[in-house]
Length: 477
Image (cartoon, rainbow, N blue to C red; front, side, top):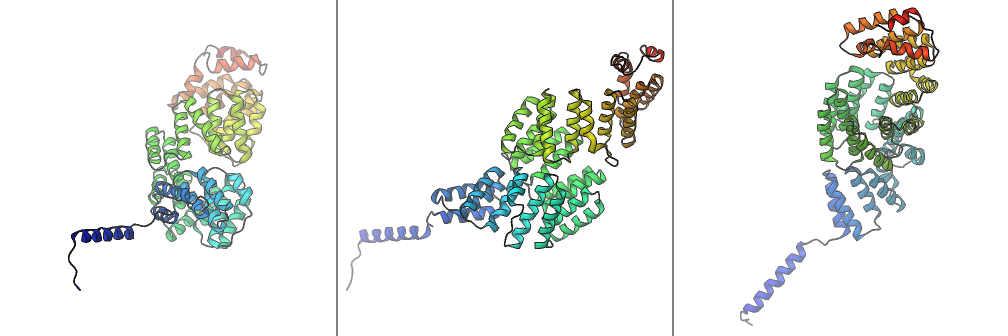
């Protein structure tokens, strides 16, 4: 049988074939396909795009426990730790594997400043998977360190290493503990071993930079280590923050701002970006803007130590001394081992006219071996206000011994001699300081009616010393 050619049926057949090919070549739009696309983006560290895919998958299947877990991972990578905590908790409630969720949730809680909550909820949790357990215990150890509880941190580090003996993050924490004990050479040796095994461990690079700063005062070497950490992970916030802090310590505000912009480029909405902006506003003396940013940050992480200390500093500059006291005290309640918070709180008490509280606050920093020139100088000022010129002079001498090149401490040591009537000795010491130092602190102390004379007048008015002829002569100095 033969068939005649029919142009119309031929076109129809071609159209049917085309449609069949199109249908066969287009994957159906399902939660699974979108999740698969998101996983691929996660592997490429394109976290923002991954977030979009996982949210889209969850719109199609809101009950997906895996979808919540994957979205939590992506949110953490994209710089939204608060959102990550929410989604990861939802995954847990939906019975998704704790071995998968808890290590990531613990990391998100750390970034979000939830140290206390992390140790309370998961400090004693056990997991079946050994690497997952090592990761969780390492995060718990970090949270204990953030709260100043080194004993519990050591227990958690040991637990992590018991699960995986060569676990890099736990060994890095061991090196950090060595550094805290000033065993810097041992710490650097261990870090080099860690990095030889896993050069992509950015936490170890960052710690190496910190030790270079503290042990060697090597800002250039430290910044190179921090940059190496960022080569591994451009979104590793602690390395960005360390470079910013190093630039600020070197009075390089433009350099700090430039690094802040690099952080903004990768994590524009990260809470730490807001914290950096608050710091830069503070250093630029825009205290009102800094306060506004700090108040927003307090809502996100009310127990974050950095935020609390910055809040105290801002309120101190704005004259809200009682509020500043509250913030510094809260920080010290969470972690008593915060030298900067102690010194700042002591300064607040000095401004409030409470020298006894200055001394009680500074007590841990005045112990033998503490080596804090700033604390000794503050204590000296407090002793002066309490009328104990002998103790004041001793404190100022200790400050000068710790930091011989600090003209302020040396000036205050000279001023303390006035309390025991040695105005001539004080003037001689101030003149010597003025001659050898480019700093104007001693010069200002020598100015009539603004240095020696004013202190004499104050001490006499307070009844702490009696005016002598030598003191009277000093009024014309």
